[in-house]
Image (tube, rainbow, N blue to C red; front, side):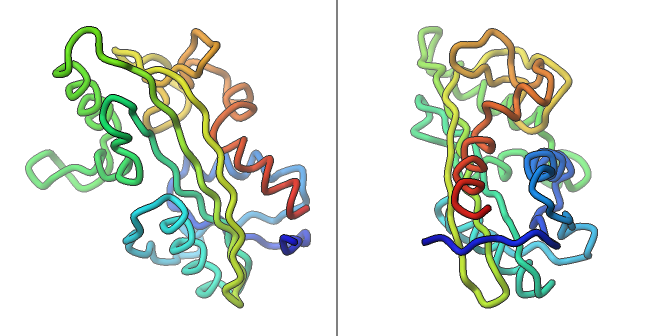
Length: 207
């Protein structure tokens, strides 16, 4: 039996503004007062796990301990079939600039270009199917953790399309649709995303 989450303060263990917006919107109906790890000045722990669940747990536990509040972390990524599931848990790492590429930070256009370059090298008939995966870890200060996972399948397009969303959204078209995630209105994307599927499980179990 999953531990229930009572209305009150909840830390979102992220410094990513786009991810914070999505998670806050999904949680808004449930009476939670959302705080972010970034706004609280909590450090970002090293993500040393080799799976989405391990990294989400590392982040959730770090924020729960530091803030002495329940904390929710998301670890998500793009898994490309023709690339053997890469970038996977290293999705954000592919966007990290090296010293010779400019100031520190994440360059998502560079990351999308890296994926496209690897696919192009495999030939015109390459399998362009991919899936976004999301694992949520909810941790309490006593180190109890609940895990929920979701995914959404689709195909990759090039060049990038749309101005909404974040990360790899401009090159991902979910199955059964013609628009990329970045071309969709946010409410439409939120209703079908990998994060939405994981949240549906969390809500059913915890509220």
